[in-house]
Amino acid sequence: MQSPPINVKVYLKGFTEARVNSVRMVELTFSSTVGELITTLCMTYPFLEKYLLLQGERFCGYIVLNNRIVDEDKLLQDGDTVIIFPPLLGG
Image 1 (cartoon, helix red, strand yellow):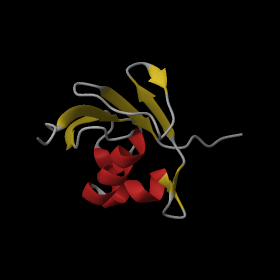
Image 2 (cartoon, helix red, strand yellow):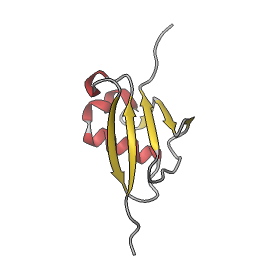
Image 3 (tube, helix red, strand yellow):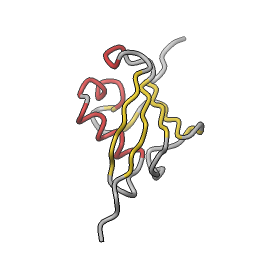
Image 4 (cartoon, helix red, strand yellow):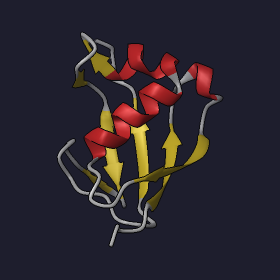
């Protein structure tokens, strides 16, 4: 029997094209990781790739999952809340 999909609420913070503070519901397969979420978002919203992926491969922003900073390999669960920030620049 196939596992049911999971739904994750995603907040995109600081992305001009995403209308700042926009919220998206994303449906993923059971046992998806944050990295797979990033890949799905970049395929769905191509403008994100220039902010989130370094040379089209490695994530280079900040991910907050249920109020904790996490890495790309963290597993997602149904009902999770993810906040994605682009890389910060400054000096």
